[in-house]
Length: 232
Image 1 (cartoon, rainbow, N blue to C red):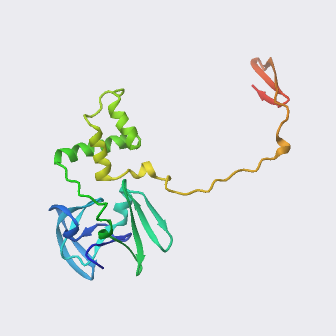
Image 2: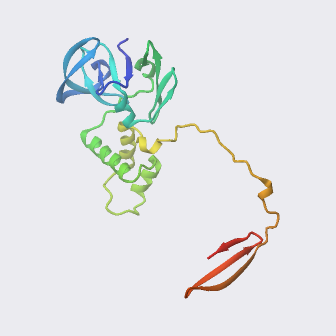
């Protein structure tokens, strides 16, 4: 595989990419050992940010750039075209992993004109995390709904966030899967057949109401005619 090609793998529990595709490379909080990438083992001590996805492990020793399917699915909606491709739906672009030699591959070079490096300060990233957490606690509204929530002033005790924090949150961490789940599925519209013999031609109804006593209890009973609908 080429240096700019990235594989999405449902058997991988971590994501690892060559540093040439990453930014903000820094020491990892916990070093790990990678087994099976290209048939060799090695330790990984650094992480970096893979635009426009999320932080991954970084190593110049990896023979393939691997994205964990589970990690991607936790952050972005994915649609599958049988024996053809996986499409990851990002806020601003769809990334298509096409099937090739039994693997699903996307070439980052093909997206260079739409993948822009977004550099932000630690304070901006922290506010973006708060905005993303607010989206979770608010039941995963849309971007516009979340912006309206923090700007209209109708809810007290809200964190001090701005429109830019919300937009940055969705740029950094993606659209919450809980918001889009089920919305990417195409369902054909099904119309139930109507038995015209059951349709009433008489639309005017008369309502008869009386009080009925049964075993010492009083009931108000109503009958709608000619619909023959009874209310108790």
